[in-house]
Amino acid sequence: MANELQGQKIAILAADGVEQVELTEPRDAVQNAGAETELLSLESGEIQGMNGDINQADTFKVDKVVGDASVGDYDGLIIPGGVANPDNLRVDPDAISFVQEFFKTGKPVGVICHGPWVLIEADVARGRTLTSYPSIRTDLRNAGAEVVDEEVVTDKGLVTSRSPDDLPAFCAKIVEEFAEGEHQVRDEGATAAAAS
Image (cartoon, rainbow, N blue to C red; front, side):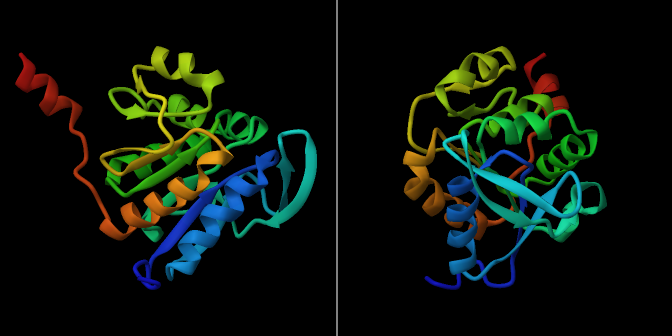
């Protein structure tokens, strides 16, 4: 099953302060399954990776500025964590717009650790079941998500995990979900109409 993602292109959306292992391990997992990856960020150049949110790690070359990226060019999206990374992403209108557009397509998305902060800002966590780093679970509940404490959770193509400890399960599941392709898109209007 080494080529289950052959021909796919996966976007990794990250900014300065990304938890390095949450960028590199999922990237390596999808590349090992045959996918091409592109690192999208807020500016061109490089972003600073971190170890444990405190210690500077490696820098990573940005392939494309997210404002110049088209959702149609990608088959899946990965949003790593770290505290500073999603905090930087969630205040950027282009990053939030990209995430919103991605969710409208039903294409699979993998988000780990503090990454769901970006989903909250994009208002795509509402009505979904997911997990996250413990410190942001109240934020997710307040945004209308159902939060569970499990190493990996899948909800209609959205894969979430809690921390670097969950990376083996997270990486395996995103490869599986990306291989499945697009999932049915939630139609909030139809759901509301059916309920009335």
